[in-house]
Image (cartoon, one colour):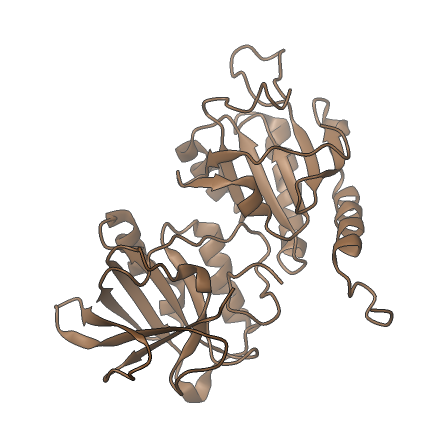
Length: 165
Length: 169
């Protein structure tokens, strides 16, 4: 999933088991779509700690997060609660989209998880920025995500500069 | 989307969709009146996220939590923000909408559980807004509410002063 690609409108259960679509979750805001391996991966837990810090900015900045893994909803709900995350998790326990998105982590044959990937998308689900997190340092820093959200917000909001709008 | 207005009234105002509401003991608790229109239809009507209005919805149990009219907090009051955070963090199974009288102040909140979903009904007992204001548990008949409206998070701002979790400008 490279920049300018368009994500399919994924339809999956959330961490409470309710069917959700990605387009509904993204709405009209810049959104981080975050594919992660699972609760058991220490790299994921470390990265989530950064995202949990960033959520305090996002909650006042009209930006959204969606995290997706192959964990079942009840596992995601427990993991999410332990993290104190206040955004929606989607469960692809059936691995419905792993192949279609070409995001299968082929080296883990035990968990068969998603390849860790961060996509910053616009409301039309077009990828603005893509980060391959297979190696931890490939993941975005929170400053990089802030920069992506700034660029997308500037493009989306006609009153970004109220002195010229 | 056309705004949704709600009021719990003792008498039928004549121009609203009206559904009887009962308390948990089954006693009449008034009429839940709904309007879909731009302008305020009644002096007690409060605006809600219009997505909770569901003419095909099943019977519901709601937590109707209202701030005293003389002590309505501003929308960005830390207590209101914290209650919205609790809604996001706890991943509540029921639907929630703020109730507003104007773009600045919050008049209350409505949490909506489908009567046939015990997990949703149970969640009403822990309504974060009932920690702020007195809340009434009411049974409401079918055809008014019931759609599960859930914010994505972590954003919890209001969009142009509209009742949260409405999430489009």
